[in-house]
Image (cartoon, rainbow, N blue to C red; front, side):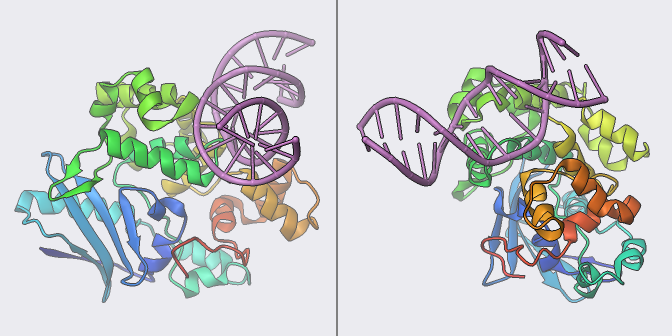
Length: 299
DNA sequence: GGTAGACCTGGACGC
DNA sequence: GCGTCCAGGTCTACC
């Protein structure tokens, strides 16, 4: 079955895929030679599908081997539209940055969108897995989590959907630690899953929240395991650009770009992007560092 | 409000 | 093969 999603305005499928490292994390899989992004999705009715996503004239093409009922097509369309941020109006951002040589490429290439997971639960959990560890370990923990607790894709055993909050909530901290090597993050992941499963924490409501960004940040930082870096990262995924996700990489790049390699502080990173005001998170994210080269994707 | 130390894992390195 | 060191944000206790 094939579904088409039309896109208004400048849009680059590859730029969205390569906007950050999410495409390297299961249940995403990227085929560089075919410019094809696949994602194993579990629908609300429990069906597990392999969605194949690619660029199409004027938008995005969704393909799956499964036949979808009319009632299933709508949530698939909505999920993919959310994943690619198709609801965002980037015109104000383009206007703000088009005269900056290090950012002009964003509009020129139809960039500015950040790849998301279908659910905010998945994005929050994955963000916790990026904290205080190396990228290789993030990928390993995420793969373990999915292989151990995700529902398998029929006829394709090795691939699984991202685990539901309910499935993770039913596990124990010891089981999580042992089967996924989450280390001290296990209590945070378990608490997140249990709060989401019980309804105590409505993570999907963050997607449509009208709270001011500063208030939304406070709400995010109430979640165990989410500190300043993780909150800023999640705000970016929600389309809020007022905060910079400052990690060790940000410190390194700002040091090299503006301070001759001398050590810098988070305040220095803030100062470097302060001129971009409400767009500073985006300005940081899409700044041309001339070294951004994700493995497996040449842009 | 600022700071120090603990939290875990796995890779790199030296022996 | 074993032991040690290190990188990576968040949390908590303390000043």
